[in-house]
Length: 199
Image 1 (cartoon, rainbow, N blue to C red):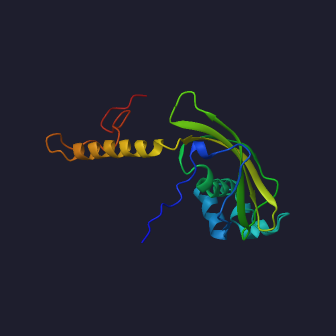
Image 2: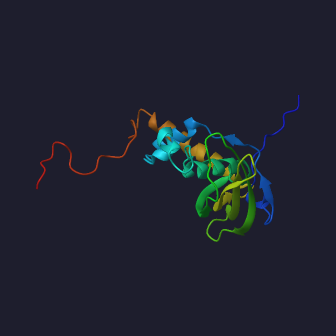
Image 3: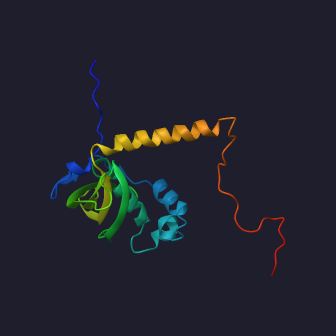
C-alpha cells in the first residue's frame, strides 16, 4: 500500500501574480441556509426569511442574504488561497452585480493580484487576490478583493509543533497537584453582587 500526502494548500512561495485558481466545489443554496444564516446574524430583513413578504417584492421570491454569499465564496476559496493562512487582513471592493436566490448553485475562482514579503514577519508573506462567484448560468453574483498573511512553506510545521508543546505544558501544569488548577476564565471585573452600588 502506498500512502500519499493529501493536498496541503498553497504556501506563500506557490503564489504567482496572474495565476487563476478555479475552486473545486460548487454549493447549492437552500432555504434552510438562507433562513438560518439570516437569523443567526440577527438580520431582521424579511425578504430573506418571509416567503409571503418576498413574493410581493419585485423579485417575487426570497433573496439570499448577501453576507452568506460573501461567506460561502470566501469558504470555497480556502482550499486554494488560505488553507495555510496566518491571518486575514481584509476584504475590499465587495460588489454584488446580480442577486442570489434559493436553489442557485454558486461556483467561484480567484486571481492572484499581488504578493510581497512581510516587513515585520519573516515567516509569512502578503497575498492579495480577487475572487469571483457566479451561478449555474455563469452569471457573476459577487466579486471582492481579499488580502491575507500566508505562511511560508517551512513555517506551519514548526509553529504547530511549538503550539503543541505549549499546549502540553499548560495541560501538564493544570493537572499538577503541586500547582493546583488554573483558572479557566478571566476574573469578574466591576462591582460584584455583594458590593454596595452607589448612585
